[in-house]
Image (cartoon, rainbow, N blue to C red; front, side, top):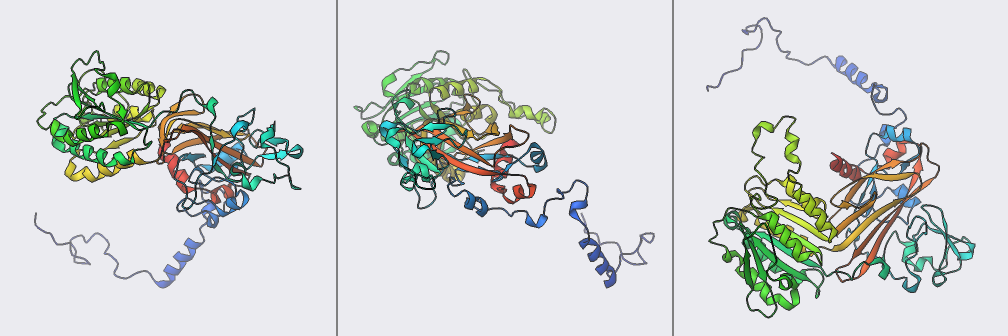
Length: 556
């Protein structure tokens, strides 16, 4: 196409019936009047504008990092650090009408196992024979906002206001202000975050050892993309840093159109591979040596990882029996629990859980049927997730396909077990290898809580109604988390139970009961308080933009 000159300007233009473009700006007087008119405009007077009672100049600017408004920090210095618990606004509206005028999410973001701020450690408290001290009505744990009465023989729960007896082993006299003399020496009375050593009644079985089981697709697409080499080298480099030494358990199962079990018995010099071709009736050929102690079988495990890239280098199998492989992994891990890491490079095509290619129907895009592609197609994966959760198994999915892989269906495994989905479209080791190495290393070595449950308690007048994140909801407010790590956060939406709040302060307490990697049953508790306000402007001034965006992102 030839470059065309613009039409001539001025009176000789062929567009002579159109007004000529001005060659000079408006007079200065006109500009000045426009500026004055603009400055006189009132934002609050426009229809649908901000509430007239809100001072626009007083609206907050975004907080950077894990900050808490100075006003809240001054009023409630005993709150847990905001990296553990953050409200979307560090205030609670006093009425339903105030909530309706807020027009932003009212809720919280909980990061129960977040890494402690620099220079700080979460204090550990062991009550010994006294047992963990809790409110006998609402089961709140003793915390800095609890108060003492009757010369120290009673303590009042800050959430439900019930007066509880103080065990004799925990008794201490009070000073003139009603504060215990030993409050500063007791972390549970002076810190917003604390960990309690859980007694035996908090255990339904002996603490499990940290266990890692790897389910690896070895079909032709995995071989050609370089997946096996990256995975094998990364796992081997992390063996010294896996959690739970010397109790760590490890195992591997590879699959294509058949299942390949690997015997890691410590007396072997090389692992033994056993192939099961029957996908309808999966069985374990050698149940006792498929998940082994890493310390005892370290040489055999390293030999397997060294040979894995070459073991299947001539494989031309294009099929994937992921469903039967998951069944087999469940049979291996069911009695122990742990973390199952699935590396999938081909759409499941054989056995139970096989999926059809539905993502290439371009006719669905841009129509009211497009959302169907985001809905799990086969209930098998959600059903398996429920079984995994019941047996304390968390599933992480590494999707590394160069074609459609139905993340909507496979993602159910991670969503309901507290796991995570990693997606690498058109994976090639030369392009995505470093990213996979970094994310897999982080997944294997970050702090992790095993066989855990989490509950968030609220003070009078409010409650959390909806929870967002990867977990299985056991009851209205109990989140089952087979594994939760330092990178996992959860969002929840808050609602008022009363038309008009009758308290001046609302308290929140997050409790995570879990097994540590060292084999100790613990309860991590985060406690925070927030003032009840009647001013919409104050809600905006104490807003936490990071928490608001986090809740919005999860609620859609």
